[in-house]
Length: 619
Image 1 (tube, rainbow, N blue to C red):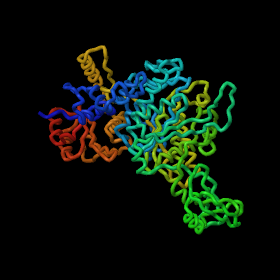
Image 2 (spheres, helix red, strand yellow; image 1 turned 180 degrees about the vertical axis):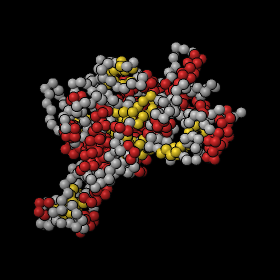
Image 3 (tube, helix red, strand yellow; image 1 turned 135 degrees about the vertical axis):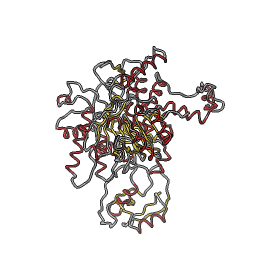
Image 4 (cartoon, rainbow, N blue to C red; image 1 turned 30 degrees about the vertical axis):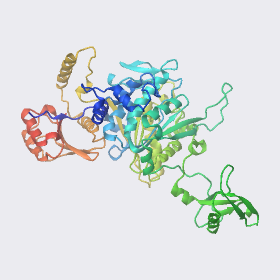
């Protein structure tokens, strides 16, 4: 007897089941006779010889296991396009997504799995100011961050306060689930950068060591975010810097594919009109604590130095002949070695872990830039400067065609940095995610008509794009972006939540009743058709930047070819499905086919399944 055709994915992947399935495939002996994971056997296998499984180093906190499970449960939501708030919707590869970032990261897994080159995030710091996020998107279609209360429109929100004994735990739970998903989106040679302050710096390092691996720690950047010298008689140490920690997905792959560098620093001049161009110098004499080669050097003024030098005498003579040695103090001082700007540009300059404000920008500079852009001060608190993020993208070695992601987008500075690099010929794409967090009525942004942070983010990127195009009319730049909103699924089975107090049989009956009531309307009506196609495409790996071509060879039904991410499928959501369409479809049996389950009676179902076999899917 033929099996029923499989349904296409209507949720994001159930990654918990997938991970368990892979574990069972590799280690079947780790499972009991009923197919359940034997956790003790797994721990015993992983424990080093002679070490008890109860004596290992652990990083634990309240809710850790639940947070990890939450990361890998499927999302039943979807992303809905908002062309009116987009810019150049049909001709751009950039995205700004408005909604909860945990659900969004789940929805992006199928399409963007191991495709993102660089992630930068500036998550909410765990300070005395509460941070609030939804327990579960499925609790309500309006499950967004909201600051004014713990329950809004029936949504139970989690508020983490200074007085809470679970302050650190709740912050770690929020971060863990998102970082687990973020890692899966990174390409093997990708990098993630995370801004953080002192409150959770230590815990974030330990969390990232678990998720990305301690050996993939790339380093810590100490950025001076304030340009002035604060003075507070109540404090011993004033905070003028923040940390940015960086982790590779795989350090070896990163090194193989190219190491990112920052813009050159140093003063290059050409006082002797050297034909090789501008140059700077560095000492040839060994510094204190350095070893070198000892020999005598006579300067042009016949001063003799008997010192330890950075290289062998033969090397020095070759450099002198090549006019790469400069003597200071008009020929009386120590020799210095020339290095040319063109050479340094070719090899690039490594970053150091101290980033001063005069090179990488500071908060006040970033605030002033926003004020100039919006024509109003204090639009957004403590924005990051574009120079800082641009340098981070340089370190991430973001190149043409790469994808940059920021899922705590804030004012949208990451998109701004990507745009600035486009002017240099580096045409990367970005994905921003920002919650529509409420703006308080006493804030400047509220007076300008903004009600959510996501609105500021979208407008900032829009204004920046206009500015870039106006100032650079001869450079072709993709300054557009698509706006998507996190929303309820269009499929009724995703809108049903089982009652844990009821039996499986009762919940199954309730689901059937729910589906039957849903079928009374036209699920695939003209007004929702594009959104439904987008949901199918997103959750089945064709992506949001797909092509939909209507085929002329089917006069009785609308049959489309859906193409995206280097794969395609035929798609027909019509009901009823004519006999002529069924007959004509059989000529395409080498392709994938998605049809509406309600459109198939027994005969049509078996006819199509005989032709398409496993390539037939229903929705």
